[in-house]
Image (tube, rainbow, N blue to C red; front, top):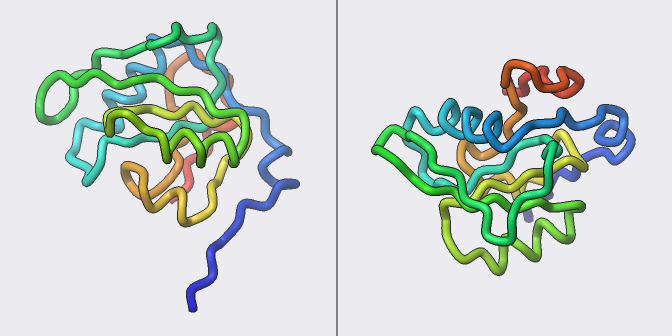
Length: 132
């Protein structure tokens, strides 16, 4: 039997997610996808400076050429799980402001096997420490 690691709510709530514009999010995706991952499904610990459009997509220059990522906000773990289950396309970026770390079963299905922390210039640096 394997145990899943759950994010510590006290630790997750202690740091506020950095605020990213859609352009900063696009640059983060380009940085993250400059190398091949087994999936394009990506999650970034951040809040958006402006709400995304109904079917917001970002054109990203990745390792294999241009790719369009659908932008999806999730306000909590249960909502993220529901959205992942109903995912329309693998090229999706989930904006996750509620936790710096996700349970292993969720991270396993993401690019790099984890939630990424932004490194964008000009974003709030509160959540910028990288986890390896």
